[in-house]
Length: 219
Ligand code: TMP
Image (cartoon, rainbow, N blue to C red; front, side, top):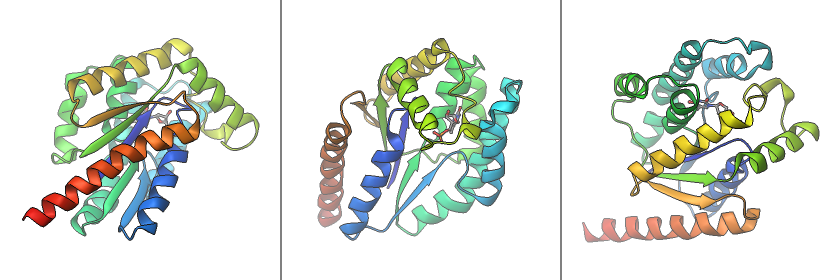
């Protein structure tokens, strides 16, 4: 099973994904926690370039192609092998992020992005996507607090330095994607406190896991 987590900066994805990973492991599920960009040796180098605030002049197309390069490597090295071994893959961001950030917010052609995805994804879509939704002013203020208290590194703050309007467009993009695929997306109110968000995610996850168990028994 392939599960992705999406949301603007400061939505709390990383905290939630860690909790879910431990929860699933404790219950004996074989699972992998991964992220984009930067979960392979090559991807780490790409991540550095993408998130470095010094690279504020990066052209949108350069940015798009670097995310695609990271993803192509990630699919080949991590996602496909893990899924073919029957593992649950929990991924912090995947292709919806590209459509929301580079498509909706940077303004690159979404059909062009989808065509590139058709080339590199080999139809590898998530089974379930949690969208942690919240107003960008709350998300950005949380993200900057984490940078100021050292929980996040300033050397990866290129997107945090974008305007509020940029992040508004990302949020609008994500919500539009969720409306297009209501069976895949679960939209969670991420401005609630951490434990409430966790309970909302766990309720969905437990339901999905028990359905999977039932359908296996039925076979
Ligand atoms: P994060 O790992 O802290 O979530 O940072 C990754 C940043 O990269 C975040 O600002 C969103 C951005 N991003 C894109 O713009 N496009 C993408 O395809 C992905 C995966 C991330």
